[in-house]
Image 1 (cartoon, rainbow, N blue to C red):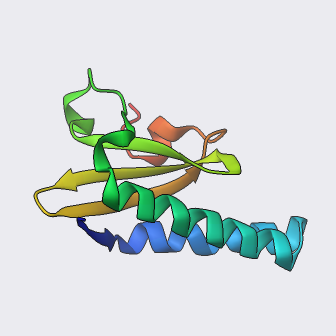
Image 2: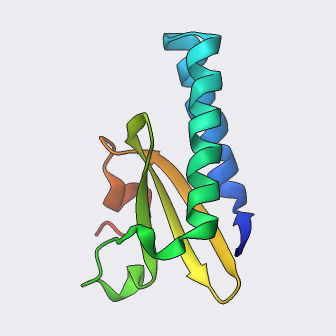
Length: 106
């Protein structure tokens, strides 16, 4: 199993999602999200190629993959597989302008 590394930005993303879920939902929804995200991380560690390449035609996003968080399918985990590491880059809601958020807008 590969080692999981969470970028600082992905940790910020998760805190933002949890704050939103606490404000708009409930503590139990926020806890379910955290549990589902951890399950997704474990799956990505054991089967890192399971996610689909994100915009493979774009050289700037080469190697970035995405995976939907189980039971919270509107949330996407963006990650890279590097040797013995799965690096979590971002955790974002799919309705956002992902191209801009990921930093590749014109």
